[in-house]
Length: 162
Ligand code: HEC
Image: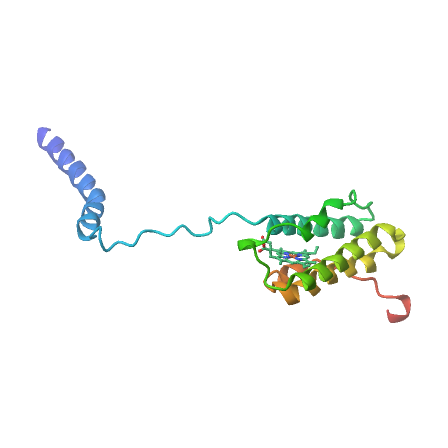
C-alpha cells in the first residue's frame, strides 16, 4: 500500500520536474547580455489620417451594401474634408502636398455628387468615388488598392448588352 503511495509521489515529482526543466535549462543557457531586447512591433498608434481612411473605407463599404439593397444613403459625412488637414503617419505624406490636395478635392467632389444624384443613377457616381480613392492611392500609397478594388459596386448590364 505504502509502496504504491511512494510510486505515486515520485511520479508526481518527476512530472513536475519534466514540466519545469525546460525553463530552468533555457534560463541558464541564455546569457542576459546576448539576449536582444524585444522591439515592440505593431504598437505604433495609427495616424489621424489612417484612422479617417479606415472610417472612409467602412463608410464606402456600407454605402455599397445599402445601395445594393435599395436603401437610402447614410448621413452626409461632411467631416471627411478633414483628410486635407489630418496628420499622416510620421507627419509626412509619400506624395507632394499639392498633388495630395488635388486628389483629395477630386474625391470630396465625387462624394458631394453622390448626394446630389437621383437614386437611379447613384451606382455609377458611387463607383466614381471609389475610383477617386484609387487615383490617389495609385500615386500616394498603393498598399490599400487591393482593399479599395473590392469596394466597387457591380454595375447592371444595360439591356442591349445582355
Ligand atoms: C488624396 C489622397 C487619398 C484619397 C482620396 C484616399 N486616400 Fe486612403 N490613404 C491616403 C494616404 C496618404 C494614406 C496613408 C495614411 C497614413 O499612413 O497616415 C491612406 C491610407 C488608407 C488606408 C490604410 C489605413 C490604415 O489602416 O493604415 C486605407 C484602407 C485607405 N486609405 C482607403 C481609402 C479609401 C477607401 C478611400 C476612398 C473612400 C481613400 N483611401 C481615399 C491617401 C488617400
